[in-house]
Image 1: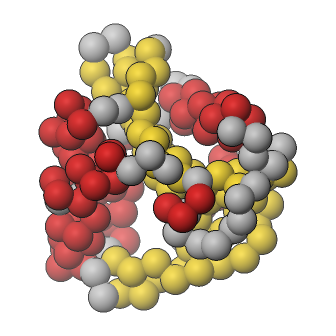
Image 2 (image 1 turned 180 degrees about the vertical axis):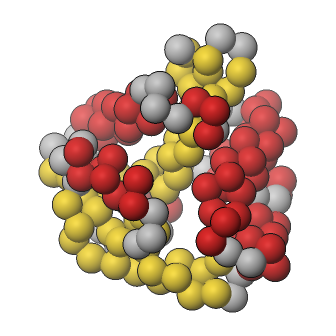
Length: 169
């Protein structure tokens, strides 16, 4: 397993894994129209390029040999999707390809988020997770996160609820 920080050179790979993992995770519970609308909005090249260039956001790939197995996006400051304060770091995206589930890649990515938070002097790590994603919720609880709120998440124009889960470091 290898972990690397993404740069603008990784844009095509980032777009591909973003679309693949999001679709794998949510296609069964959402209409194709809502899913495609979200993919076009969140994972178009222009949007991802802006996110990669923002100094308050960081992306990381985790590899299994030569293949990208998953990725992480973290935010601080103004890039956080909720106002959580300067002492917080957001895990906005953490996805692993299905064929690599249960092999420790999610743990590696989450550990990177904790390390980044510590390096930046943050006291809390938080994330939003869809209220119907039971496997992810169980994983985060096992890692010490507790639910501290909720906020809306739009899949296309379908309003869904993400639980806000926080871990104090």
